[in-house]
Length: 262
Ligand code: ADP
Picture: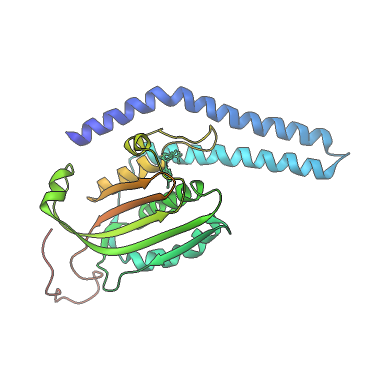
């Protein structure tokens, strides 16, 4: 029922804001059309300026493409294909791409727990989630800073779990993404997971990143939480269900001693 309510609130939000999005999208197209027209006019006289106009057309088109991709990912209820994941390996394999995304002014640090449990989640959506968090972190650090991704085993006790809607206590794999950026006000933290909530200027933010993260983590049977301090930075903690059992279908038939049904 809670899921249905959330879903219908989401649909309502989509309905209310479709007009706004169409408006944003039109603005982006106006940039593309205007720039291409200017480029056409300067084509023979000023190649350098032509190039600048074409670059801004490209930028406008890329913003529009990002918006539609996010909308599609958000509205399509993608079926998840969960599998055992070693988060340390996943983060390592993303490091190069993350560095390129973050740019030169943001330092990427990884703190890997030894003996880390495996998580049970959809690989490509978890990667998208980490990328979403990294993009938010980058936006929060225009002057540069550090992005730290830390993994650990976590146990959610009854008391903590009971305070969170629908989260069973037990073993989880924690991925914490911390930035040294602007941080969020209490009001922003309270609304950050809402679809279409954004504090970024039109054309920069869609307000869909964190709501996508929220939907994915909850659908995976996990839990996500934001800790933020204005002027200091933000930590987003992803608790993913622990995978019990063999690493893959092809390995050993003897389950490890700690295996327990979930
Ligand atoms: P968008 O990034 O498109 O605005 P999100 O749903 O990802 O949409 O984020 C919603 C809002 O939450 C952002 O506009 C921003 O105000 C705030 N936010 C998210 N991540 C961070 C962060 N790491 N640091 C500061 N503010 C953040």
